[in-house]
Image 1 (cartoon, rainbow, N blue to C red):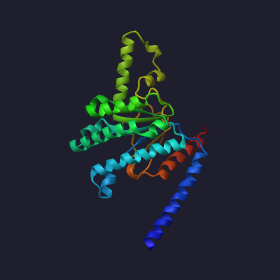
Image 2 (image 1 turned 135 degrees about the horizontal axis):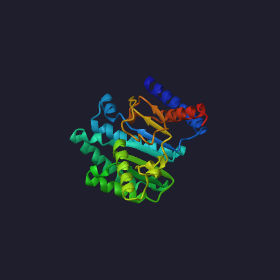
Image 3 (image 1 turned 60 degrees about the vertical axis):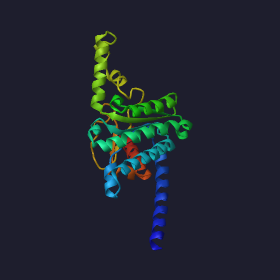
Image 4 (image 1 turned 30 degrees about the vertical axis):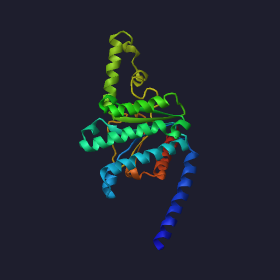
Length: 260
């Protein structure tokens, strides 16, 4: 009985704190674009005795929560690092499970009424040609269903590597120069940005990473040149709304400090 009372008190205290923090954050400047390196699914599973695939499944569920938080706060663009090109070298069974999870997730997104009600455009960033055909088809379904939406933007970096993205952009720019469609003097920062996967979106205001690692792991290297970086030691599936609000609050404090 005493444990139940303690749990109720703790939950009440948490909810009160979350509401107070939400109110405080909403009174400040809300970032337009938040990018997240979702890290820690496997370690989360190991820490609480779950199978590896259960950690990934819980990570997927957490992402759906974070999408709702972004809409609630008016964050227009959410970009998440779901699967890097390096991840393709992981255990074959794990990669196969993740591919099935991606296929299921994209098909679910295409039918999710929250996506259509809030007019959320879904875009995949990365070398999709490296993915299985069933995943590519699921991506195409989700993108086609949301192509004309413009209230919110949900970008999933899949089979993504920022260096590869920049190499691709350099090759395309060089091709344009060779064909006489672009001169060397025309090449500036805006030109390079226009050849990246993220050409249609503003650079991220805030980039956050979960799990305690403090590196960017080949994610949006060009785009995050002026982004605020935030690292938390919470594993991705355990990431709470208060953790997200604290990241936004830190971003706001930095904006005030630098007079932005």
